[in-house]
Length: 58
Image (cartoon, rainbow, N blue to C red; front, top):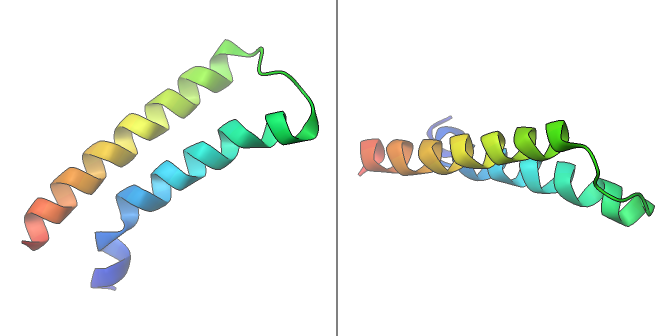
């Protein structure tokens, strides 16, 4: 369980990347600002989670 918590930030970042890459692979252009803002928020939350969780475990 501790290992899962340790990689929670990375998992959130990977989810954001998958959301960002999926339309590009399907041939659709990314024209929705809402989707881009959602991905940006997920990336920031994932980065902050990764930093804070790893400081807690060290």
